Image (cartoon, rainbow, N blue to C red; front, side):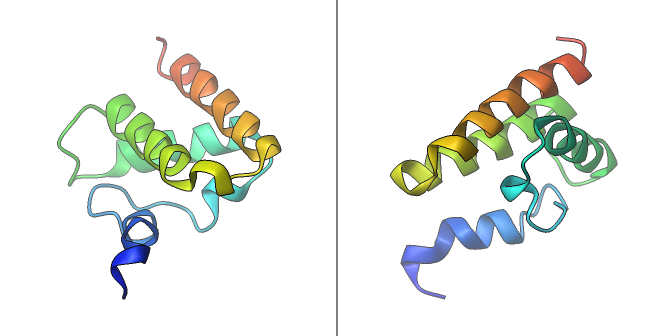
Length: 90
């Protein structure tokens, strides 16, 4: 794998969370947040709280996609962040 694709590798094979396939491409922020919450709570390898782990993975994806992330999907993922906070009671 080339050095240019390291972020793709992290997203696909995170050592901390087992993500559902294509989770960041879904169009429903509630579904994305619920999936991340489930993955974070189920993980025995994470080093932070479930909320921190899930939010970290979501932020990582948004930041690494940068300008290549369609604005529509960026809005969906931003809504997923708010929904994730709501699901964790924050």
